[in-house]
Length: 248
Length: 319
Image (cartoon, rainbow over all chains, first blue to last red; front, side, top):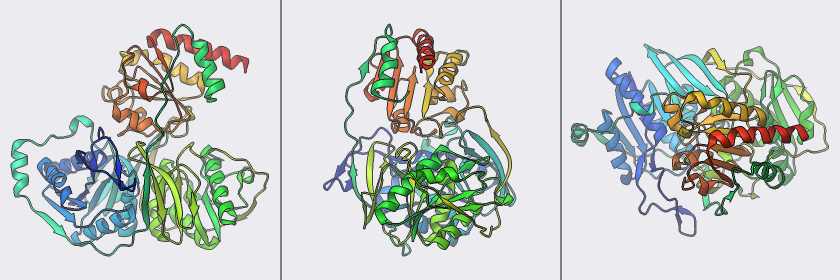
């Protein structure tokens, strides 16, 4: 079984988000980048398939050379090889086209991508890859078992979950639940040393039109100070929520 | 030429988000000088859609579509969009809509913008405002394709009533192979889901143990709210994972979010910041949540919550 795990290179959650060039570009100055958390759950589940079912695991990212440390980290966690599609990631659709091309060329059985990245929050890449490959697709996936060419998956739905059966080739939009937080792996020294020797192949992008364009960014208007209500005067809270906030 | 909107129903009845996306579609249609066509799948009564600006309803009745299937639903919507010559397709931010829309985007070769919070600021170029960086910023996105798909963020646009009525006709799309088969569904039918809730009551480690959640559920009951929890609480197994809200849990975009005994870690705030009004109840006045909240009570949840329940019951009785 060949698994392709898509890795998005995103600012760490605690990063301050700033914009440059007249609020048209994300300012990466001083920003720490990490593996997108939703992708990391998928990568960790892929490691389980590697260890228990002998799967091979390739990680892929669409981005410039600056994203390579993030791919190396995925290799240190245990992926066998990495691919970087050498182009700037501009929008979900064009990224999906690059990933679908890599998946198609490499003949992967399973593609796992996070349900969304925590930077642009597009939430469309896994589904678009599935659509482009004409493969089966399970989004918001919180459980995955594979047996030969058939698969059972659990999908989180609004207000619950559903269990589905499907078959390979399969694309997964993954999230927490594929593995738990406590299953995530911090690369050890041996893993980091081995990662340096693992192949990281840089490939050229295919042509892809930019179907959406990021024009500019705005920050939310700064919040006013909190209105404190005394615990002895909760009538006031009820009144504020009713008369001022108008939410009850 | 029209604006197509997918109006979701559950067991034949429209979800509230169906009326919100219909209201949004009407606003876009007004800007473009065109009409709104809704697609309803196995819905019982579509007359309510006219109230929210829908001019025409395409009714699809097909037992193959009784259970949601992203491939089949996307195929049905694609055929509807093509038959109507839709320039813009509007969908919600429900789990199902976010599941099918990327497939529809590929099928229609359409640019797709998610988490959109306002009507287009311009229709040529077609530009919408959406949340990004997990609610730390907004992004103005231009959709460059002939057909555009807009995913509207929950509770962002609201319901706008119009004095119209919708005509209805049957529509029978061909359904492709499903590919994914639903084996079983595990869903609490007696509870408001976090995604559909206008009010969410959420609690954290400050509650000290799962045995203390009775008052949280009671507060939620009084308000008709969904219950949620912080990440540590779901990691400790005090509450099910499905209640975990925050960056790696479920996103929340409710009208009112009440956080009880939650300190307000940045990952938690990222996931709930799209909520309009936030209330925090916490013993620690230095808890970061107070900086993100609109209203705060510095006090012990075990005293404040039961008292708040009584006050709210009295308030509801008066209404």
